[in-house]
Length: 422
Ligand SMILES: [Zn+2]
Image (cartoon, rainbow, N blue to C red; front, side, top):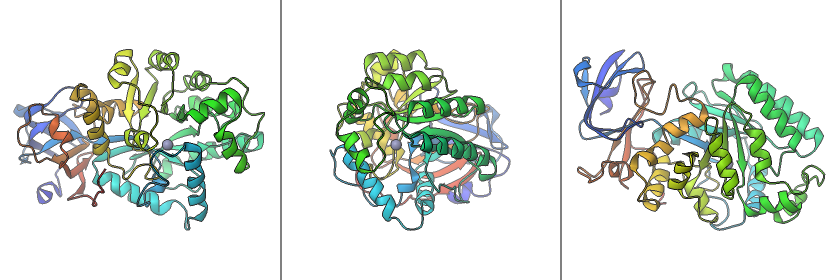
């Protein structure tokens, strides 16, 4: 297939057995016509020569990973053990970072390579100290959220300055900028308000880990517990930073003022907080990281069908290789399909396509195979030739990404790196 897709002309059509546009169900025997990197027609009648017949494959919109930390992408296995408490795992992350030689660059490059091989055409990345984009990254591939951790006024001031610099550097460096106040238990409320104000002023999205663990809720409510012990040990705890009786809703109210907010995890959000996300569904999204959630053995995740009925927009993230065996977004989709068999296939695919694009604010360009969008296409070969529900072709355990087009150009082809069993 490679030869057929190498050196593509400005205008061409692709034919495939199945097409999943992302905004509606499956289309059999489909034709997509592309001109100058954009999709111009999905009608057979409009086909333009050369018409490249891809044969018995599935065409999907390029997948969008809404949340990851690429710096950990060289890790061969997650840190710690399944089911461990989040504060203990954070200690391992801090220790690993201290021992790492050479900064985050190699991990970021490895993670981008793995994401391209896995059919991902856009991703939401948390950028920490020393973060930089490798030259091999396609322009605009990464939405980079500059992370801030600051419970003291001094650290908060430094974070705000660094965040301004990060936004200013984005155009030359080739990433789409965003801001990430890390979590309600590591960011003083004043810093959160300042970062959200900066995001609003500069029209960039915000990503924050919220209600991830029970220990976080305990810290916010009572100012004590394992999370406080961990922060104290790291010398980062400030007892006066967070007012007593705080809860995730306090952060959500501030975050709702940003143009777009990704609420990462939200594992322990209550009904009122989920309703708040639904009320602000034009700008707020919840990011579910299925296999990371499973790794920590959190309480069962919110029922996805009920979330959707409620009006909460949900998208998927892999999180990092520090809590997940790989960055395979198809494996996340498969995980969801296996555990929520009654959820329509269209709704599952939306988690990694249309919903994720809206979460990141790139929905006018990405997330669907539709006229006017950028021609970001994932070519999937599956072992099933006929499935009762065509979406089963995507969740097929043997499905492999054969090729990836970004803006109508071949970016990645051939078998991806060997994957560990999940
Ligand atoms: Zn994360």
